[in-house]
Image (tube, rainbow, N blue to C red):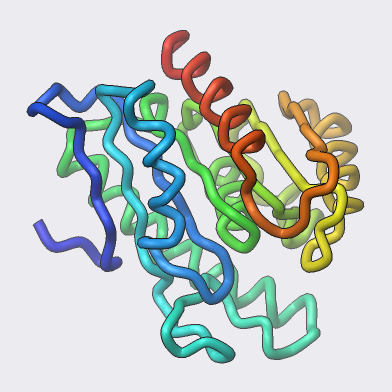
Length: 219
């Protein structure tokens, strides 16, 4: 099947049955190939999991070889929110295609992403009409708290991981997100990685893997 977003898709090896999916959303200026590197350390521990890594629906304005989920050329919160809503619509269409193609329900799917991909994962997971297995975000933040409060439909199990030396997305956003989720009765765990900038180190990858494994095993 052809999906509405070009994607890297990594199926279980040796023809094993697909029981779960992890949808990995790249950061600003990245692509599905970039974020698929996470699967290299995860797939042998999750043998029945399909990894799906779409490219953003728009070319990145500052890196034409990469993609974006929403434009960041204007420092205008309302503009950014409106652009992220367009990505929400496209990603929900994509996720529905994935669910139909591989016969999966939300409770068998983990949404995960880096930076801008983390931001989209949080919105998608909480605005959905059905609860996902979990959400794992790296180096991200909440795009707009007022919008998320208004549109939130379901609860979620969320893990957010951030580097304490992140120079692109301040680690303060991790603390803000944690406070927001606690105040709104969302089950959230957070992890701050020491001496880590804006990337996903092995330590963060391992923490994310352990969290996802636990959630998949309990569904």
